[in-house]
Length: 253
Figure 1: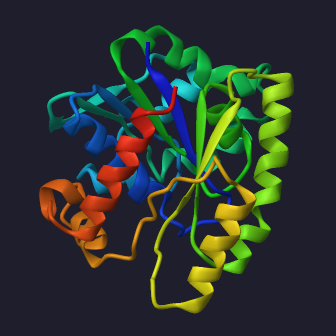
Figure 2: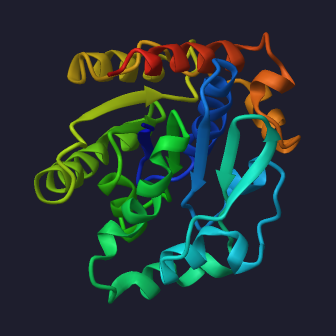
């Protein structure tokens, strides 16, 4: 039975997609069967794995969300690592399309349930908002990974995430009882970054990853080459850090 993990923050540009792409690849290298779901209308995860941003609606998640059709699972070309695509064109108005649908917060859960036995992990790349799509992701997840960059404004917005998660756990999905904070884009010689890391480790003791994702150009270069960092630069800091994150995830029950 798959463990479902949503990768979330309502602020953009913090490293959610990079985390989804490389955690998926890292777990796959650890012999786990992984499905990645691109729930972001910007379709960055779709691009990361070399698929076009504009796909036929039958080939991306739009059709599944609006018509409750089966998830169109695609092969990434890596054995045991699959993906559900997004599309900038189709997904542009998805929040409006779902706004009046009865039980809209359960749609993704209904789509995922039939395939839970096919994977070890299902990773959901959420949009930079706490709207209907992110609510759907939290409503079917066992674990939330909150990706933050070491900056004041990232921390300021985290309380909103916890507020929404608490309501989801109480009213919709009692299985969403666990979360981990992952610090990304860390620059060790920046005093403010050091201070934020200390703050997070103090505030979220036991719920923060021990591993910190260091700022690393290889992560950006890998995305531009449409591959994960392990295949692009296996000895880079990015590969080392995400490998250690995957080891920590494997220990979460």
